[in-house]
Length: 68
Image (cartoon, rainbow, N blue to C red; front, side, top):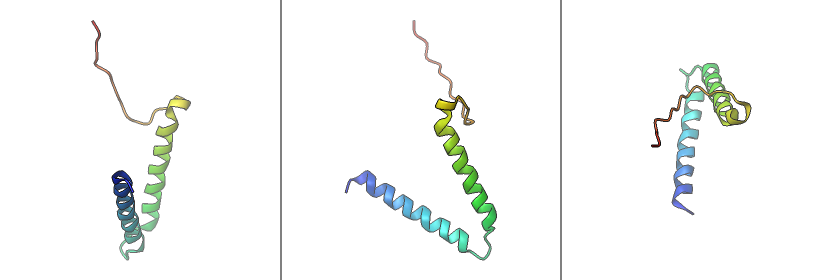
């Protein structure tokens, strides 16, 4: 297995355990956590398709390179 794949696997496992811990905690506000996750996913999808749809994902990238 490649090093990059191993790192991604470990990170996903840690994130998965953290999500489960938050959802099953007695002090967790599960509906707010799920809502925030859904909003984050929607924003990520919007950013991914923004080059096709012409939309904006809230990030501003400017170029200050000048030629000549």
